[in-house]
Length: 572
Ligand code: FES
Image (cartoon, rainbow, N blue to C red; front, side):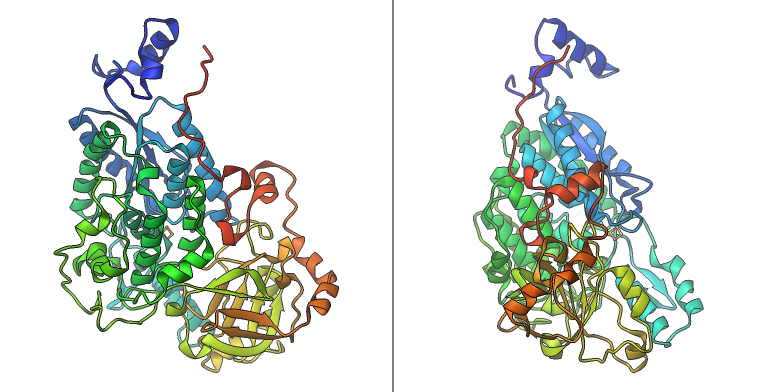
C-alpha cells in the first residue's frame, strides 16, 4: 500500500524520511514504518480530570491489539478532554477548542486513520467535529455508561436524581443531610452518566450516524463486551483505511436525519441539536433547525429512560440495546447511509428482539406518540428556540403568563427564593445573558430551579425560557437555545418583568405581547447582559469574537467546513 498518507513522512532515502523514521522507531518492528502499514492514532480523551473517561486507557489498549492484529500500527494520542462536572465556567466553552486542537493534531501527524475514544458529554462531539474536518478514516468508540447506583434500595440516575433530590430539599420534602447521604451512591462504577443524558445521547448519535460498530453504543463501561468491541474496532479501522472509507462517505445528510430520528426514539438530550449542527457544518452538509422538527415529527418515544422516563442505560442494554430501539422505528430511517463497516445501518436492524418491553416500549404502544424536538419561532426567538416536549408537562405546552426576568444566573440566584418575588405558578421565568457569547459558553442553566415558595406549594414545573442550554439529564417545560441570544442583540435582551409571554408548542410559536416599536425602544435593558462578554485575551477572547449562534451549532465561524488531510510542508 504505497499511497498511504503517512508514507509522505516515512518513505524515501533522504534526510527527512531518515529523521521521521529514526525518531519514531523506538522499538517498533523493522517493517512498521515502511510505508505499507496504516498508521493509526487513537485520539484518547482519558484524563483523571474527566472522571467519566478515566478508563479509556484500558479501552485504548484493546483497540491497539486489534490494530496490530490487522496489520496496522497504533499510536495512543492523548487529546484535550472535557470533564462536564468540573470545568468552569462551562465545558461547552471548550468544545470548539478541543475540536480545533484535535483537528490540527490529526492533520499535522503522520497518520492514516483515527479511532476516537470519547464518553463524557462534549468529548464525542469534539472528536466527531475534528474527524469531519480532517476527513481521514475514523471510527468512534463510545466509552460506555456506568452501572446503576442505588440509594435506599432505589436506583439513582446520574444528574436527573441530583436535580430531583435538590429540589426536594428546597421544597422541604427531605433534609439536606438525607440528600448528602446519596452522594457516595450516585457514581457506582467507571463510565459516563447512566441516564439518557448528553453522553448517552451522543453515543446513540454516533451509532445512528454510522460512526460506531453497530451495536456498540450503550455497552456499559465495565462490561467485558466493551473491550471486545474496542478490539474489533481496532481491526476495522485498518480495513477502513484499505477501503478508503471516510467520514464524508458515512456522515451524509441522510445519516444526520437518521440521528435525529434516533434521538427522538430514545428521548435524547436537547444538546444533540447544537452538536449535530456543528458536526454537519464541518462536513459542509446543509442541516437546519427545521430539519430537527421535520425529521423527528411523529417519531414515538420508545425508550423509558430518565430523564423522560424511568430506567437507566444498563436497563436499556439488557432490554436489547440501542439497535433494538432503532429497529422499532426502522420505517423512519433512511435506508441508504452506510456505517463504518460499509454496510447500511438499517441492515443491522433485522432480528433485534426486545427483551423487556417496560424499558423499550413497543411501537404500537409508545411512551409518547411524538417525541421529536420542537422548534419554536416568534418575536422572542426570530432565529429559533427549542423545547423537548417529551420532558415537559403536557398542560404547559400551551401557556400564557407574565415574565419574571433575570439578567444572569447570579441575578437569578440572588432573587429566586426571595419571599417577596412577584411570581406565581403561571409566571414565565426568563433567564438571559447565558448564550454562547453572553455567558460566554452557553452553560446548562436553562432548567432554572423553581422559586422556593412555589416548591413549598407543591409546584413542580413552570415555563422557563433562556438562551442557555439544559443538561441532558434535566427535565421540565424548558425553552432553550433562544436565538439570537440576548448578548447578540436578540429580543430576549429587551423583555421586561410583567410582559405577557405566550408559548404554543402545537403552532411552534413563542411570542411576547410587546410591539416591535416598543421592543426596539428598550435599548437600555441590553447593556446589563454584556457584563461577562468582554474577555481581553486567550481562548475566551477568540471564542467570543467568533462563536456563532445556537441555531447554527455554536461553532466558531472560521471552523465551519472541511480543510481536509493535506500534508503540510517540511521544516527540517
Ligand atoms: Fe460526564 Fe455526565 S458528567 S457524562
